[in-house]
Every structure is written in C-alpha cells, then in structure tokens.
Amino acid sequence: MKSVSILGSTGSIGTQTLDVIRINKDIKVVALAAGTRIKELAEQVREFKPELVCTATEEGAKELAALVPDMQIKIVYGKDGLIEAATVKEAQIVVTAVVGMMGIVPTIEAIKAGKDIALANKETLVTAGHIIMKLAKECGVNIYPVDSEHSAIFQCLNGENKREVRKLLLTASGGPFRGRTVEQLADVTLEDALKHPNWAMGKKITIDSSTMVNKGLEVMEAQWLFDVPVDRVQVVVQPQSIIHSMVEFVDGGIMAQLGSPDMRLPIQYALYYPHRRELNSEPVDFFKLGKITFEEPDMETFKGLKLAYMAARKGGNIPTAYNAANELAVSKFLNRKIKYLDIPESIEYAMDNISYLDNPDVNQILSTEATVYEMIESRW
Ligand code: MG
Image (tube, rainbow, N blue to C red; front, side, top):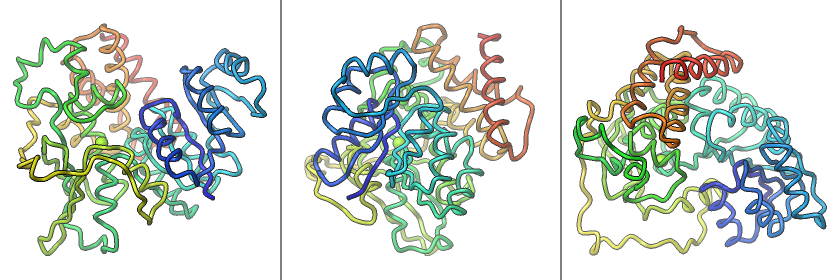
C-alpha cells in the first residue's frame, strides 16, 4: 500500500486527490496539511485517519484539536509544521497542492527526504526550477506533474526519447475573455473573471487563467520539467479543453493526450504512474463535441503570457519577480483593491525594477519575493 502526504488538502486539487484515494481504497493518507478551512480538515481527518495534521496557524491547530479530541493524531502548524507534513517518515509520495511560494521549502525538504513529488504547486518550478530539478536527480526522486497540461505531455513522452522532441505544444482554453481587446478588459469585474468556461478551480488559478498568467507559469514550469528551452514550448489555444497538450517530435509526428476536463485523471496518473486505473469521468463523445478548434494566443492583449516568455528567457530571479507580483496583484484584485489590467502592469513593473540575480538560491528567491511585495505595495 502506497502512503501519501497531501499539502493543501482542502483546496481544489487536495479534495480531488482525496476523491481519487477514496475511490481506489489502496492508498494510505499519512499526513494532511491545510490552511484555514478547519471544519473541512476535521472531516478529512475523521475519514482518512492520518498520523499528522498541519494547519496554517496555532489558532487553527487548537480549533482542529477541539473538533477531533478522540483522534490519535499529532497536530502541528505554520511553516515548520508544513515541512514536518512534507517529510513525515511513512510518506512515499507528497502531493504539493498548496498555492503560492510557501510550497517551495517544503517541496525541497520532501525531495531531500527521498519522497516522490506529485507536483501541483506551480511556484516551485517557476521560481526554483534550477534548484528542484537538480536536487530531485541527486536524490533519485521522481517528480510527477499533476497539472493537466504537464501530465498530458508526461503521458505523450512515455517510452519516447527526450532528444527526439522538437517542441512541446501546451494547450490553453483562452479563458473567459478570449477574443476581447485590451480596451474591453479595462472594466472587467471580479465576478466576470471568476467564470471559467471549462474548469472548476480555486479562485487564484481561475483569475490566472483569465489573464493567461496561468499559461505563462505553465510555460515556465514545462521548460524545467521536460528540460526543453522555453522557445520550444508553444502555446496553442484550444477552447474546448479536450486536448490537454501535445508533443511534436523531430519527424513531425505529434502525440496528443485528450480527455474530458477532469483533474482526477492527472492526479490519479501521478499517484499510480506508470499504471492506469478505472475512473468514472465523463468520456469524450466526439460526435456530440463535433469539432476541436485551434487559435494562436493573443499575447498583446494577454500580456501576462508574453511577459512569462520574457521572464523565462531572462531567467535568474526574474520568474520569481513575475510570480510574486502576480500573486500579490491577484490577491488585491480578489479584494477589489486594484483593477483587472493592474495585474499584468504589476508584473511588468516588478520585472523591470527588481535587481537581477543569476542562479538565485532559496533565500535569494524568498528575498526577491519580499522585495517585489514591497515594490507593489508602495506603487498600488
Ligand atoms: Mg493547467
């Protein structure tokens, strides 16, 4: 029986991971970590009986303890608690589904402890890909992508030779504002931006999908995960979200992975790789679907994507600046403090004004984040 630790268990990926575990019944959950949804966490603790549980705050830990007084569990909290959950002895796989840069250090510690990673935290590779991939190799640890696009590419590369890849074709739905002009984006409201046409996801990633920053982050992740230069990662808009991504090989042959938009498939694939398991997701009905269409991404309107390519080419701490500015700007937009187009503006501003560091270590990555936060706070 496999044992897993889930960081971010009450979020969208976390709950779907538990769903997959519930269906399969042969994975043991040894640790759960969540932020502030303590009641949901308590229910998960009762159902999955982990040994260790982590909350964001001490307050949360006390609240949880009061909800499950009869359970034999260790409750920890905060950054140190998250590291404990990531490195808990029995876990073989750590699902990193926390949102934001707080995912970096626990992921590094999990790799050092020899755990395989089911990677759902984008920030880890975007900001620290140069550290993570090297470390994973040294520690003999596998990194299984959970994001649907990277899982698709991972599936397309099965049994293939990496040197025979010409390019990665990362598909994008284009989000709810596909086809609009910059002028039409100026007055976008929070409610508009939270309506994703195909995928049900957490709020932050839903906003990121609407700005195409999510695709930008995925481009940056893909170059690290699959060791391909960023200019050989091409974004293809495929609005029906049926093709989850593709790989073009040197002979012009293209492999694609298709399926209904259901995150449980990539999650399950990461947990059971190289095996496939039954899954009750909606099958693709090609006759009902009728057609799958393609478009070139509009990088002038959705500047977040263009800036991601620029950040990836510059490298160093620039992807961190990109990510940190976006993280703060999106949280401000979610709190109705800034306008929609201030999100890409913030990113560009941070990329232009941060001092460049080549090959940053973890402390430099975190200090870049802090500097960018100050920068954005004083400007917006
Ligand atoms: Mg994705």
